[in-house]
Image (cartoon, one colour):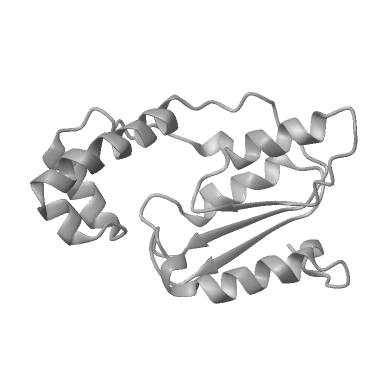
Length: 160
């Protein structure tokens, strides 16, 4: 979603103030692949969520909470599975910084580096220890890096 918004802002006939695109835990648009989890059984979906370690186990163990929670997750996966980039790369003239967990089973360095194709400007990656939900343990350094990248006096966005 962030890429689509940035692409539309970049195409706007008036200046929008778009300075950079920051993405996290997702392959670049050219590397997206469907995992078909929207149609998985409840048990398969719960198994996937447990493996990703991003959902509280108590929520998944409680039948009433699962009944409320799983349809939301299915909708997210349905949207992800159906997504195709609407604008061909390179679309952006602003720097792109991609963050990811170095132990994420679904997003490897090659998939993250695919974000470089969406920009005519600089591109950088930052990995953090952990899986898909790495930022639960690394929120402070990630936010500090975001601010450092946006600081016009800092050369972060020019690093590869």
